[in-house]
Image (cartoon, rainbow, N blue to C red; front, side):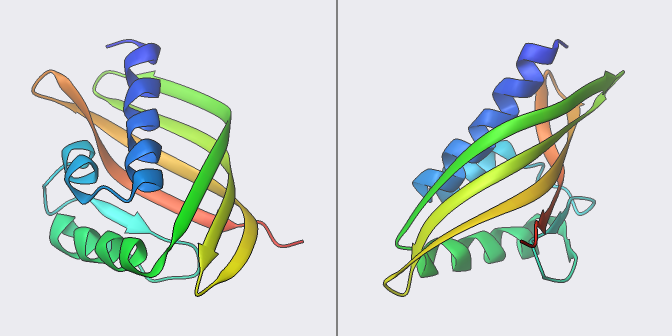
Amino acid sequence: MTKDEVLAANAAFYRAFERKDIETMSAVWSQGTGSLCIHPGSNILRGWKEIRTSWEQIFKNTAYIEINTDIIATEITDNIAYVVLRENVFQVVGGRRLEAQSTATNVFQFLGEKWYLVHHHGSPILR
């Protein structure tokens, strides 16, 4: 259970996001009912079923997305790890080019020899 493994799981999450790949996103997330996701400006989503539906909507409504991350902190204790980072987001939605920054926290749990995302919280940085 190394920092490199946690960062690799975190990178896999953002690759799935950029590729709009729901199957890879599904492999990154814990399928449990205890998973939580808070997209910028939205309510808390509980459990993989709700979270998956939200990603499907985001992928369907986003023509293109690119996310560059700046890792601020990574901590690991036993079977829980978190990554705090800045997301630099460039996307095309409805034919419009948008750029934004968010601060995010991704919490991973080590389950059955693999790190799974159990909590993602993104907050917009207002300019």
